[in-house]
Structure formats: C-alpha cells, structure tokens
Length: 205
Image (tube, rainbow, N blue to C red; front, side, top):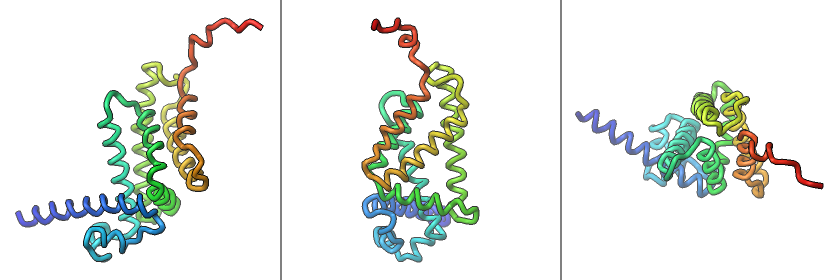
C-alpha cells in the first residue's frame, strides 16, 4: 500500500514538473529555460528534478509529449465535429503563441536524428503515430468525398508533418511567416476540385 502511495505521488510530481516546464519554456524560450530554473519552479534541486526523468534530454522529450497530449485534448474538447485537418490548422495557429516550445521542438528534433540520442525514440514514435492517425482520417475523408481520391493517404500525412516541421523552422527565422495561412493553402490542395465550378460555362469575352 505504501509503495502504491509513493508511486502515485511520483506520478503527480512528474505531472507538476511537466506543467511547470511547459509554462516556463513557453515564456522564457528553450535557450533560457535551464534545468535549474525548471527545478526551482517546482521546489526541487536539479538532481531531484532529473530523478524523475533521467536526463535533460528525456525531460525535454517528456515536455514535448505532454504538449502533444494537451493539444490533442483541446481538439477533442472543441465544440462540434473536428477533422484532423481542422485540428492541424488550429494547432499550427496556436504555435505562434509559444515560441519557446517551438524552439525546443526544432532543436531537440535535429539532435534526435542521432539514433543514440535519448529523444530519438520519442520522435520516431511521434512520426509513426501521426502518420497512422492522420492517414486513417484522410482515408475516411476520401470516402466522404472531402479529400482527393487520387492521393496516397499515408504519403499525404507525411507531407503534412514535414510541412509543419519546415514551417516552424521558417517561422523561427522570420516571425512574419504566417504558418497557419501556409498550412491552410496546403490543405486546400488536398480538397477535390469544385465540380460546380468545373461545369460552369466559360465567361463571355
């Protein structure tokens, strides 16, 4: 019973750390959010903080995983039916409000291309899960006539993820880049041609 209580307290503390880290990194930026500052935010030493995650890289991967969970919960809680496309558009639009988390994502993802990196498994799993979920939703929308039938759903899902990742880098380089607008333009390319427009008579010259 004592072990179960200790485990529950450990899980609660871990969640407290992740919530604080999301807030601090979003506010201060990845480069200025040190492990010491994150530890102080939850009343721990640096060693005490890393006790819950192992390494700094594993901590930051857990922060990004928590961000994904939070974004997914927001989409699921939204009023009315929401397609993957609309949820994707909303998330990209909100990302401009949390530059620190975007910095963290871009830098950690680049480092994690090394298979030995502690966050490599997180990014590999994230890509696989995104491709499966979005691919399945694209196939559903194809059956409903809302997405072009000639698209390969899995390939389209991968291109959406690649577009989002690339746009985040471009936005960090140039804050005037409207990520949501570019994603919306890409999503329109996936929609079927407007049959009524295609059948309309040519304009008189």
